[in-house]
Length: 177
Ligand SMILES: [Ca+2]
Image 1 (cartoon, rainbow, N blue to C red):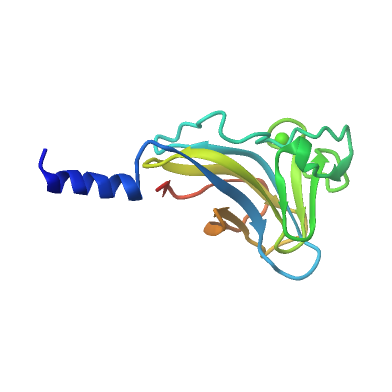
Image 2: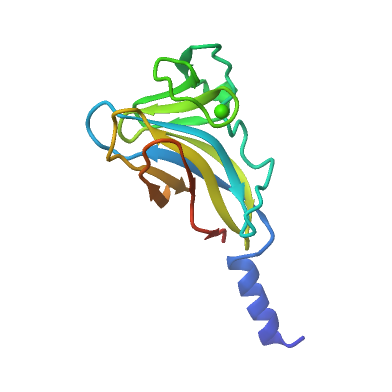
């Protein structure tokens, strides 16, 4: 192997080694609009370009922990839910027949983000050199409209969605480098 090729390989390895686990912060944050608005989230998954869900990447992907019980709601506990709250506002775990009566997509509980600019995040491990898509369900509270939900990776917004009733949202593929 000649020296130039070795140098090229060295540069490649230094900047974007493929196939290496990389910790990234995935976040879902509501658009910072004024007023009392809420988004509901449930059943968040990571998938590859083939559309197949990749299990084991996101913890508590359906917001079934902490258990708040039939008809109840409670502030999200980061220690139990494994999601961290982002910014001011309410991040609430809600049972499907809680005060907002949102229904659910999977299990019996959902996340409620009440306010503008509030969200949740989780550090996940992906693999460099691979494309991923984030697949989740979202809805706005009954009577709310016009607000976006943002998907962020390491603080950068990768896609915005604006939905009404429960909608499956899938981001465009993003390459982890
Ligand atoms: Ca759920």
